[in-house]
Length: 180
Image (cartoon, rainbow, N blue to C red; front, side):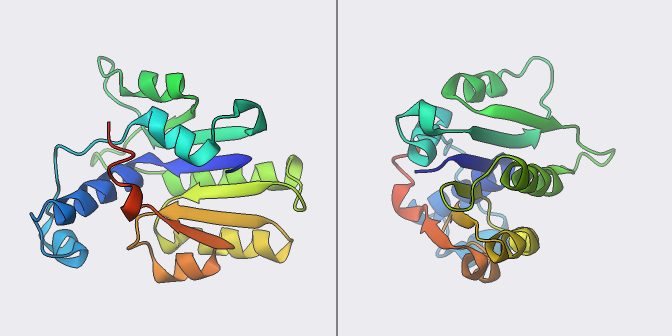
């Protein structure tokens, strides 16, 4: 499906739990789930299934599959599973308030660097797995220069982000296929 893939793991994971809560009937709709902080705490995405969904089965066609997230405690092995699935890890420490920082800018920076240093606007596909509008300026600039930037995320992704993308792929119908 893609030559370059960039995943905001926390964004994907948290919003996937909200989508699952709606599907399970725990929340009436996604907006209520967001407003009321409702999640399906049992929903977990399989890194292997996610990698295959995003990258396909021919690993030689992938130039980069980067997964961004917060550095876990030393005894947490979650990122080992992501590496085994084929993701290159980009981990950042949380700030003093335990908030995730530097993820969106890290993704935008690496995506832009790859596009202009290694990418071919006539051949390569850049896939962003995130749902917020922070990425719109990056996508707009890349598209102006002829790059194809696909956004893959849950259906409630930012309208502005969906419109900026060369193509949007909704994940809601793949919720169970991506489950661990």
